[in-house]
Image (cartoon, rainbow, N blue to C red; front, side):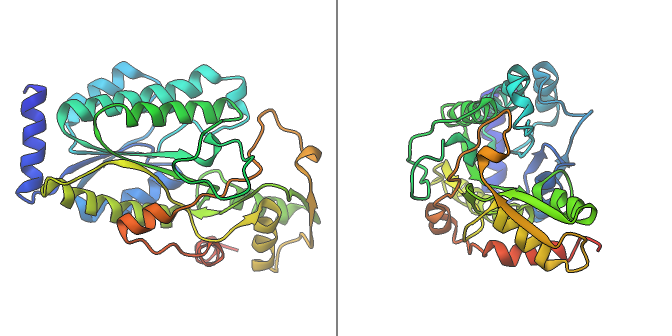
Length: 310
């Protein structure tokens, strides 16, 4: 089937109301695991991860796309080791920039819809106000640069796309700040946590469910011939520091060993990669476009903790 015919078939299926085939990357990650469930009402989901899907292997990724021929591609998979990216910039770029570019180019040729995720780390954190989608980016490290390159590739591809920037993602599985703090608080009497970086902790389930709502609307708009893609900020409401987030976690679990959460400065906890001091995202555009209710990060934290055994 030619690319033009494939594109026509994809859109015709949407117009006729048939459920699309959805290719989901990174199914074992904290966001991918939630998306595998949230996307089920929208169509048939093929959810893959290593070793079946390696975003660093462009040739294999291309073959997979040609074989599966999805109508929707949802790409939460990423290289997320922020500090390690400083010593592995080529691998970070392959996964976070080159792979999204390939996904977007395939989607453009075949008329598929692509949902892709990015990060607050595309900003340097120097401005005082929450960042809007139109604010200038200035990544501080290799991870942020790779994610920004991925954004740019998707936006320039000509594919129907939705790009969601989020912040401080956590969940009940995977590797994230919440699970790290629970582990350390069970082992130590005191935690020392950075207090001069501010953002909005975002529960992976909220982001997955918001994605499903946005995609449902996007598919309807494509059926009606009035879809416009874009870049949107999408995070929980409110703000706190890493210290405030850790304090809330410890306070919610009184049985933990840790009794003190001590605030420290970024300078007191040096890391290979610099982090933005301000990671707050203005999410008004996503809220207005997709009719989303943005829950407070504290409420999401409580719900997430209910799913983690004490």
